[in-house]
Length: 143
Image 1 (cartoon, rainbow, N blue to C red):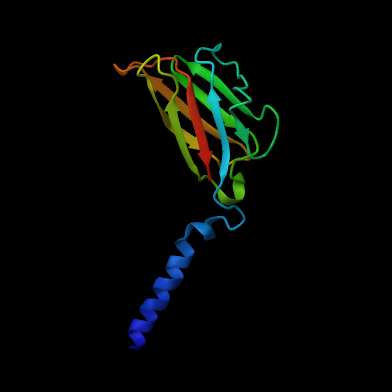
Image 2 (tube, rainbow, N blue to C red; image 1 turned 30 degrees about the horizontal axis):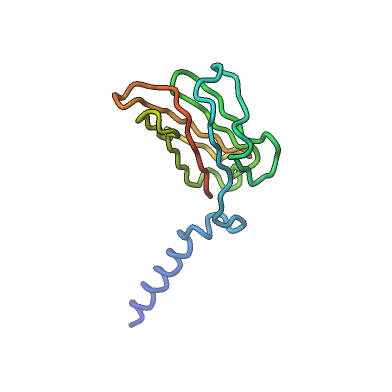
C-alpha cells in the first residue's frame, strides 16, 4: 500500500510538471496573430504589410504583421510582439492554407520561432506538381 501511494504521488507530481499550463502560467490559449498574405508576388526581400482588414495582432500594433518573399514560393511571416520571449522559449501552433480558387496550389509551414519577442514563420507554397509557386495564403499563430 505504501509503495502504491508513493507511485501515485510521483505520477501526480510528474503530470503536474509536464502539463501545458505549467509551461507558461501567464499565457492562456489564444490567437496571437493571423494574416492574409494577399500579395503572392511582392519584390524579393522587401517586407510588406498584408491586408489590414484581414490581419490581426494581439499586441495591437499597427503594421505589426509583415510578409517578406525570400524567393519563388518562399515567404517569411513576422508578427511583432507576440513571441514567447526568452523566459519560456518557443511554443504555439501555426496553420497555413493557400488562398484562392484559381489554382490548386498548396502551402506548408517549414518552421517557426517564438523564442524572441516576435513570432516568425517560414512558409513555402507549391504547385500541384510540387514546384515552388508564388501563392496567396492565410496564416494563423495560436498560443
